[in-house]
Length: 282
Image 1 (cartoon, rainbow, N blue to C red):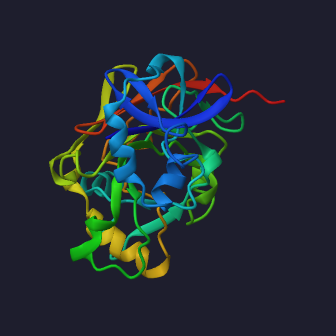
Image 2 (cartoon, helix red, strand yellow; image 1 turned 45 degrees about the horizontal axis):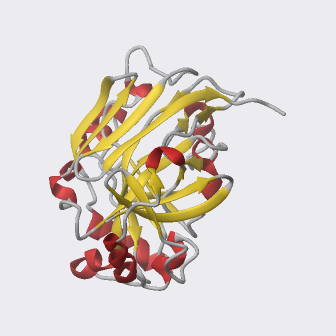
């Protein structure tokens, strides 16, 4: 299944994609959001919606992040081998985890905002893993059983703020600076992450291209590690890291500008596409 969250005529909703349209879920189930359905273990009930015809076309909605306001967005820094090399670092002994706030990301097609306080606005294409079952102290051999599905993520980064301290929080949480979507592809229909390829394009030009198998810490290990220090709840998101090719590591550095379009394309998952706009101050 490909599951979406959206706004239509000013009203939030969620549903299943079919034949270029959306089958409404909130009017046919007891669930009021995709997050609610995940928490209630409702994926099987959602799968039954495939018998219906779409209620409206995809272009009649504004896509929101697949899980709107997840409880946790845990991001992994320095996790692709090529990215580790381009930063000049040694491979980390343990995953570098930082958090993003839900209001720092937008859905597919919505503008990502370059903040007014910086022109060093960078792209980071990543694979997002959405948790489907409560996970605490899960061993890696069972970890994939706790995955609801996958999506694309752009960890838009304000590099000068990121470097204010060894912690990444400031540079990773500017309002509407990242993106998440376009949908959740359930794990039963997605290829194995080791078979996925990630590509990031800026104005149509390939910036990042790597197999997801280039991860330093793979997804089962990340779930094991994160579920050791946190209780992962359905709808929580683990963002697994970015490949080499980011803007700050180029000569000269390449930053996203207002008017650009940035795409994160992951085989078997989808293509997250967003325009870049300048933040407008009130």
